[in-house]
Length: 373
Image (cartoon, rainbow, N blue to C red; front, side):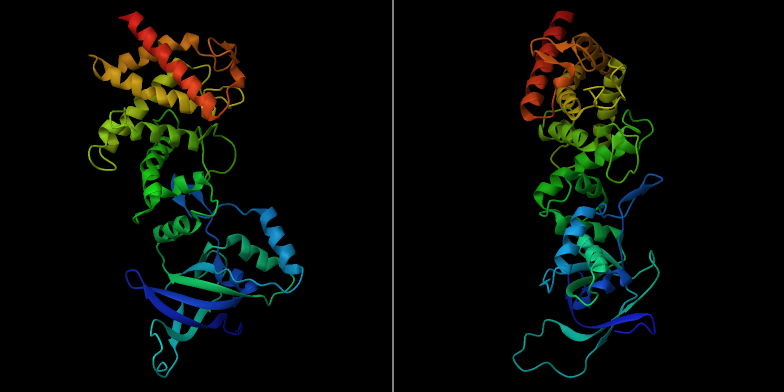
C-alpha cells in the first residue's frame, strides 16, 4: 500500500454478478477502511430521504475494540463496501492454471484516498466493526472485504436491507427504507413496502393529520410523539383484509389504487383528530391515543367504520359521527375505561391489551350505531 499518491492498492479478485456488476474480493488493514470509505447516515433533507445507515452503537463498538485490543484476533467476517466507478482494477498477466475454475480474474485494485464525504466507497455492512478497527490499538489487523461497484443510492439501500434483514436490524429503519428501493424483495419485506410507503406519505404531507407527529429513524431531535411502526402496523392490518377500508382498493395486485388508500387514511385519521382534540398531538405518556396501543386499536376500528360509511349518502359525515359517538366513552387522557377496569394510563402496547381494547371499541361502535338509526 502507498500513501505517496493518496492511493490504497491491494491484490484482489474480480467477478461479475447480476446485470454486469463488478464484485471484488480483497483484504485491507482495518485502519484503512476509514480512509477509503464513508458511512452514509440515514436522515431527511427537505423531506428527501438521504443515506441508509443506522446511528453508531457506541457500546457495541467499544466491545469490539476491547476484543481487538485483548490480543491476536481472528477476524474472518467480511466488510461489505459499495465502490464508486472511480476505483480502477489492473489485471494480472498470464493464463489461469489448467483445470482451474475460471470464475474470477486476479489483479490490483486501486482505491483513492479522498476527504470524508467524497470517498470512493460506502460501508453497506460492517459499520460498527469498521469504527472499532479504526479505534483499535493495532492498525495492522487484516480484514476481508467484498466490494461491488455502484453509485446508485437505491442499490446501496437494497443491499443494506437484504444483508441486514436477519441481523436484528431495526424494523423501523427497514420500514422507512423500503419505499425507496425497487429490487424484487423477499415476500415478508414486499408485504411491508406498501404500508411503509403510505406511512411515509402521511409523515411528509402538510395536509396529513400526522404531519410533524411521527417519530422516524431519519429525523433527528424532538418533535414526533407517535412511533411510526404503530401506524405502519395499523395500515398493514387494514391491507390484509380484502374487504377492509384499504384492502378493497388493492384489487388483484399488491399495490392497487394507492391514491384511494391515502385519501381514506387522511379522511379517517383527520376525523379521529377532530373527535379527540384534547388527546391528539400529546406525548404518549399524557395521551394513550398517541401511544402505540391507541394508534393500533383505533386503526383497527377504521375498517368497521369506513366500510359502513361507504353505504351512506355522505360517507365523510358518517365517519365523523361514528367517532363522535364513541368519544364520550373513551379514556385517553384521564378516568377509567368502563367494562375493562383499566385506568387510562394502564393501557399497554401488548397483544392482550390491544385485542381487548380493539374489541371493546368495535362493540361500542356497533351498539351506538344501531341506537342512532
